[in-house]
Amino acid sequence: MYSILSNGNGRGMGRLERTMMNGYQRIQAVLEGKEVDVTPIGGWQHNSLIDRDPEKMIAGTIRFTEENNWDLVKIMSQPQYMGEACGDVIEFPENDPARLCGITKKFAFSSPEALAALEPLTLENPVFARELRAADGIVKHYKKEKVVIPTFFTPLSWLKLCTSPIERVEGLDYSSYQVPTVSDYIEKYPNELMHGLEVIHENNLRLAKGMIEAGVDGFFYSTQYTTRELISEADFQRFEKPFLMDFLEKVKGYTWFNVLHVHGIKNLMFDQIYQCEAQAFNWEDHVPGVSDEERTSISEVRSHTDKVIMAGIERVSDFTFSSSLEEIEKRFKERYQNACAEVGGKNFIFTPGCALTQNLLHRGFIHGIKYQHKFFPAKTGDNAMTFHMFQKNLGKAL
Image (spheres, rainbow, N blue to C red):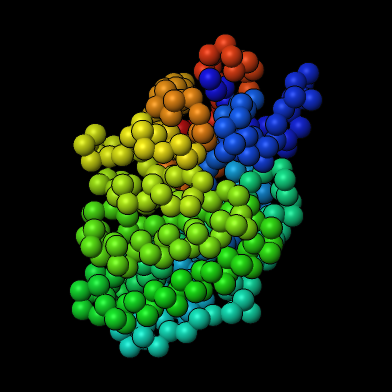
């Protein structure tokens, strides 16, 4: 059975110092089906005020990782970076850390003609160079200590992120979004769409090569179109699955820990992707308001695959349902114990199913969860876990 720890610096605590694994060793052991000292943990959150400055991004990612003692470092790049690299003009937030991203004012993918004329980018592209610099700095800091994986999206997912608002904030102007949507392209312009997807896929592969040369351990590859809520199975087979499978196939010989993030909250098409070349699956296994019939449970995925499962934490409500730290701690213990039971005691990393809520910033919490270890040998079967969420701003009441 599992117990929880993430010691942050890989050096352990007290008299257990010599026996502790670091995050890299812990996840490697999980992947190989070996016993771990404690369950690996991870979490990630958008960084809209620093994600276009590589030096600030390096420092901020390290700070966030150390504050929360994550074993896994998911590089949270600017979520519109592919559109930005292709020529989007974006108005970015200047002083609101709760914002996820900017508002696009001029679109590279403004028409079927623009998509049909798209050509591949090189690594000299300033946006790609920026992303590579950030990854290089984070990898050098955590090499063989924590697992580092940058964020990539499937081509169809990139097109969605670059043609539709990722968020809608009250009082902001989104009138510039008068461009074809992904649905428009699928229904009306399939040939232009296919060309654009092929070019974006090539961009992904070129940037991935640079990331591999920088030393990343794998990729956090996100698909937003593996849900029946957004796409038919026929269109998935034509416009999404080939690129999804090919990217993971092409990077597998150069990386060792690739995560497929299945974005969406219900009616996910896991049956179409179990055989992909990812080492781990990440998704939102429970969301308030989603029925058991619509959601994909941890136990369901485990019944079909031995891949590593990264799940268990509800990224919003687990942090915001109560103002009581005792109630939140109780919720997390229950989440952890339930997840351990569902995974069958193997190949598990305790994480949220998507980015942690930005509202944590406004509740005065440090960015996420901080665990403290109380050691229980795995063979005792004791899942006991303790953790504390620390207030960042002591002047604010929860």
